[in-house]
Image 1 (cartoon, helix red, strand yellow):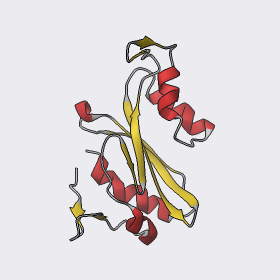
Image 2 (cartoon, one colour):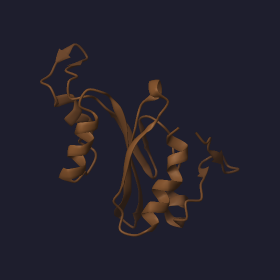
Image 3 (cartoon, one colour):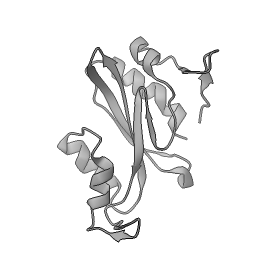
Image 4 (spheres, one colour):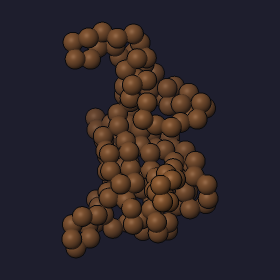
Length: 144
């Protein structure tokens, strides 16, 4: 896994995906739960997990809670649910803003810390070929 190289001011990662706007807006491509410029990611609990903070929920409730901040197509949501049926994994969204409009380049699904962030699958959903550059550019920072 690549370690990020930081600008001299220490405020943002230096990354060269080939998409200049994304590269300027990304704060840091990092593993785990992240809410930051260019990346939103969190662990998706398995469908079978029902216990949280001393409460018991129906199967799928906690998983749906984890997925609520991702704007996934029905097909993609179904795939993520399939991959997280019995196992927690990390879902990443990479994006940038064009004015007030969010441009989502794609999603990456990895194993968690215990499994060394192995790549499970990824989906490029952006509007141009540069979205492929973004996803391929961030993979070395979040997967082994």
